[in-house]
Amino acid sequence: MASSSSPIAVAAAAPVAPAGAVGGRGLLGRAFSAVRFDGLTAARVALWCAVTALILVPIAAIVALAATGGGWSALADPDVLGAAANSLVSAVVSGALAVLIGTALALLLERTDIRLRGALRLLALSPMLMPPFVGAIAWLSLLGPSSALNGFWTKHFGGPLWNLYGGDGVVFLLTLHSAPVAMLIVTAALRRIPADLEQAARIAGSSAPRALWEITAPLLRPAMLSSFTLIAVSNLADFGIPSIVGLPERYVTLSTLVYRYLQSGTVEDPLAVVAAIGAVLLVIALLGVVVGALSGRTRVELDAQAGAPARLPLGAARTPITVLTALLVLAVTVLPLVTLAIQSLLPAPGVPLSVETATLANFERALSASGTLAGIGNSVMLATLAALICGILGLGIGALVTRTRSRGNAPLLGIALLPQAIPGLVIAVAWLVIAPRIGLHNTPWLILCAYLTSFLALVVQSVHAPLSATPTTAEEAARISGASRLRALWDISCRMAVPAAISGAILVALTAVRELTLSVLLLSPGSQTLGVVIFNLQQAGAYNASSALSLIVAVVGLLGLGITARSHR
Image (cartoon, rainbow, N blue to C red; front, side):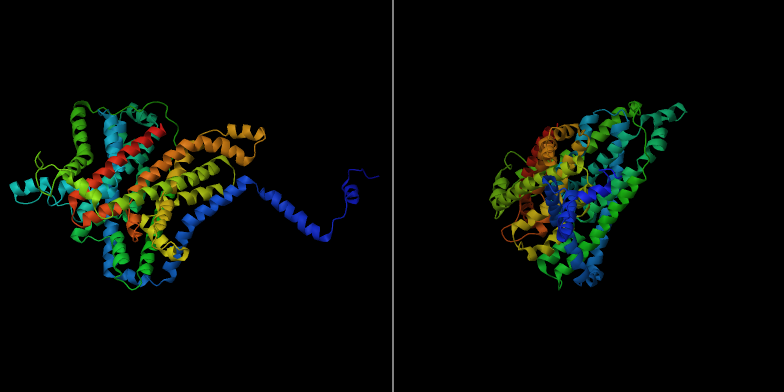
């Protein structure tokens, strides 16, 4: 006799559903229950739509136009080939030099007993706080043809010490602004190398310099390769330094060539040609990402530190090396700012500074120049909107991918961080391609969209790092207490990450307000920004006025980044 709980009895007792209901309510109901379409799912879908619109669509648009636009034939033009060669040389050479300098500084400050370690580290990182084009103007005030130093050198030795204009000046400035990035990456890797390895080599009879060279230096190769890839890809499409320092000597790079094509229309279909150039740069950038990922996968996993590293004693050379390092660091960080300030106070280039010649007229001239106030207003508006939108999206993405479980978390995080590896030139061209189709052509909102694409990763990283190191016990307790998945994510994770999101948003605002590459390539009537105003003053020969405005930007940027660092603490 069958039990009442047997499958046959249950099937016999169950009511028979209509045929349409079996396919409708049964299958669809199970499908919806599997998807669990609640508030958290809706938030996930919204964030996926945002990163698709801001990142995937522009990239797809530039690839599609490059494939169908017919601009590939122009890549064989001698101007394009020459610009590509200049870009490649400046990017590779500056990347290699920056890695060498950054690695040397990291080893010196982390593994030796040099004096004033904290102050030297802060000064060595200070070039990161200044926009590259402002740094170029600062260095021109020191080593430009009409600078006081070159004037003195010409008077006593018959020629200038060094004219910064040209390809060598581009490589020099790209190296200076990239070396702190290499130093940060190598320092982080150096701190993960256990001191036990060097101590074992010392016990076995090796000297301290030999242990540092044969044990520690080889373990830094993946970090050095990663920093070189990142720096080379970034410098490949930099616009500010080549335009200010390279163009006066006809040193043309891909970024300045694209600017000329877009502004002058010297080719038949400039957008198709520019899209082809952008697609090539995109492929190079993605190859750089792959190389960095492969180097990260092949790194050697080491045990944690068992003790503080034994610093290499410099002995009698400690004081001379400290003094020499301090002089070199001050020469490349503080000296350009001082000369920029002096240049801002002079009535004209080449006039010696004195109490009688010092004037504030350059600040008045810069602030009252045509378009300056409009540029400041546009920059503040666009930077504020970019900070708010990136702050909200970055907070949502960072909290979602670190505090929830989903197979889509890794792709969402990867796409959100992808623009960090894409040159700004490619992002600008991508938005130029899709602007007419979405009604943003010749509007400042096009620049805002490009800002969102470029700077969203700053907030995502700011939120992702602290949340990934925080246990999820608080969210689990909220779920046990009856909170929904979205409520637990909002009340616990997002509120914990709000300070980090604010810091990231401030960094977005500071970066956007002084940005040049995106703004100058997406420039339209009435939408010029502060960076474009400074660039136009420099190109028009108003060197003292551009120095004055650059000094204001540098000081405001240093203060803002100080506030950001304080909020991080």
